[in-house]
Image (cartoon, rainbow, N blue to C red; front, top):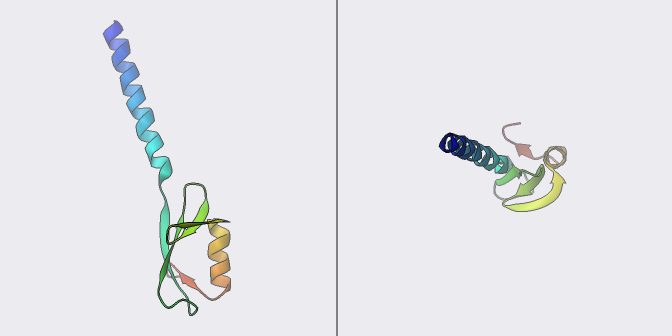
Amino acid sequence: MFKRIGFIISVLGCITLASCGSDDSRSCTTCTSDQSPTAFEVCQESSGNASVNGENTGTPYDAYISGLQDAGATCGGS
């Protein structure tokens, strides 16, 4: 019986660890602008902030993308 409880606890622990690993995901889009000579990558970090080329901007992703678009940038085909 103790082996079975130990097995169940191990399985639950593995499931818990696997589900936490996906929390660090991020999604990225490519933006272009007349003000930038090359395209640049804007990502939404797990915190919800935007990062540009790996640098956290400290600004929420949606607000950052909207600001870029208002300034004339094109992001992700939009």
